[in-house]
Image (tube, rainbow, N blue to C red):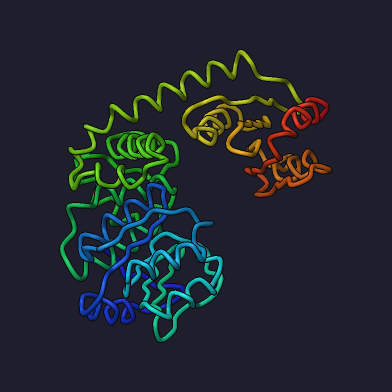
Length: 343
């Protein structure tokens, strides 16, 4: 593996942390609940053997988590693939534990301190950063397949291309960094299987983590779950063609699915037609949630949603020019749909 120049932090901090990680107390491993987060945890825990593992979303980095860690008498906390939005959460944990953070999201601040080691590098997926670091402590080469899958899932493979080529070669797969050609072959199919599998277990990621084995061949047994999600996506695409509503520059559709597949359906539709605006909504919890895509850059998806949500109490909308999301309160769903139809 080529040397990584970390944007924040230095490798010596990692080795200093690892030198005392098992010296006393309990270890907690906290990671993101997507494929990169799962892969990061798989890699890190081969070395750490944590007493406490938890998969969370970014909003779950809060006081509830702090108290949970304190209540479990944790003295070492490792965060992987989590963007730290609130440095105050880290400072509260520092009162009873030492912390290691390995991440690839744009850093909000340098969190390094006497009790925290923060390593951040841009252009890599977090699981690759974990693999790069923990490999220097223990041979974990047998997990290269899940790290390669995460690189593809996050579309962050150019900086680690040399290593990825070697990994592909090991599994007798031809490598190409072309965005279209890379979506073919054993590794791409593997990450799709894993991604759909994690959608199936979205509400029980802990179980999903333990079902994923150490070897690529183990993933074959997960297809019984991923196939259900794949079938749901296929059926949803058929329903979209039957039920879609024409709006200015594109289409609106309300999705009904037992799985959170809205983003995947949108991505498939956009790949087929980059010059069309797609808005897909669904009723989940107390909110009417929606996402918008427009890939040709002629219209801003974020601007569209900001206009559509004006005047709705408790509404939210934002994102990027090509992809955006938001919500209104569930009781305002019908009114919002009428707003879209007039758009």
